Amino acid sequence: MATTEERLQILKMIEEGKISAAEGAELLRALDTKGDRAQPLEPMKGASSPRWFRVRVTDVQSGRNKVNVNIPMGLVNVGIKMGARFAPQIEGKQLEGVLEAVRSGQLGKIVDIVDVEDGERVEIFVE
Image (cartoon, rainbow, N blue to C red; front, side):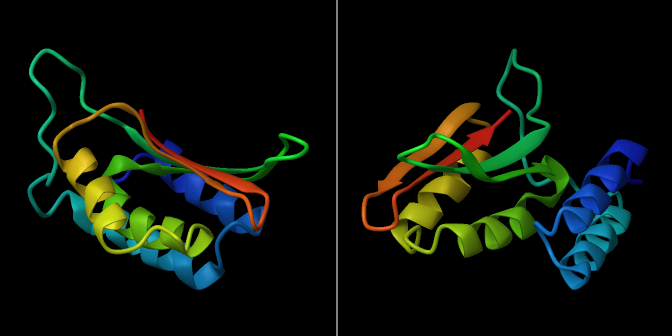
């Protein structure tokens, strides 16, 4: 069952325009069903299990955040698909690398890409 904190985070992302209402509904549905199936991630031994998948896009020139999305780890597959929307340069092997890092229980920054053409820096964290 989804926690109130997770539901409020999704509603806040809709309110701020970070995701559409349809995407929010999909996330809420995924939250309701995540307890029905086994957790796909196995935490590292001796470490607490990761709770958040975070995508941050900043402007290289000013350093200001353009996107800062936090998604509960229970929704990581949906989160990765949504995050790929903000970072289309992450495809194929790079996307597989992100998925593998998440599945293996890696914590911290797992992606740090600077797009010189668009003047953006994309960072993905597991916390």
